[in-house]
Length: 181
Image (cartoon, rainbow, N blue to C red; front, side, top):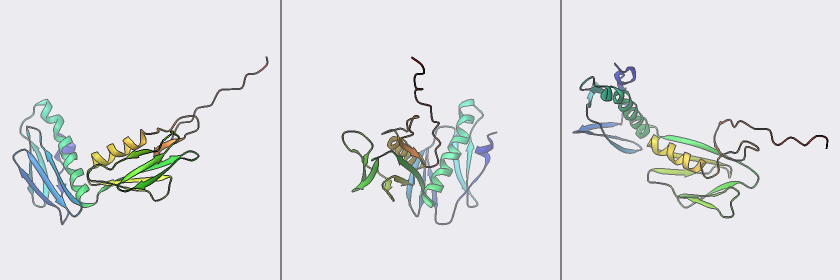
């Protein structure tokens, strides 16, 4: 039995849950999320908690049991609290600014890079070297932050580029000076 899949998901006050056929809808103060369930996985609300069950013990269904429970738990947390990823920009002259709903990022290219916000995502730029990506869908927040980071990944020699807050970059030694002659 999946240890993660067995655990019930507590439903905070103000969060509505509904399941029909193969889909789940969770609505909260921050918005609404929907997800289609794979075959063999059933979901229901019992005493203020969401319980995920599997219909059989096939290998594929057992593998999906814990995954579906985690995805639904992330949906509940997203509509009640939301998610955010913080990015830092390191490098001389590297900076970001908010342009409308999107970002304009200057990271050493001959042109500024514009990144529009996908639906359900909002950007905040508290300082020119910090970017905050917020939303209710954990998967979309993480994917958007990864796309911003990929504009200029941190390089190992001077550690210039866009990185997650608190991310450690392993530095490499540069070329050693030639000795003797």
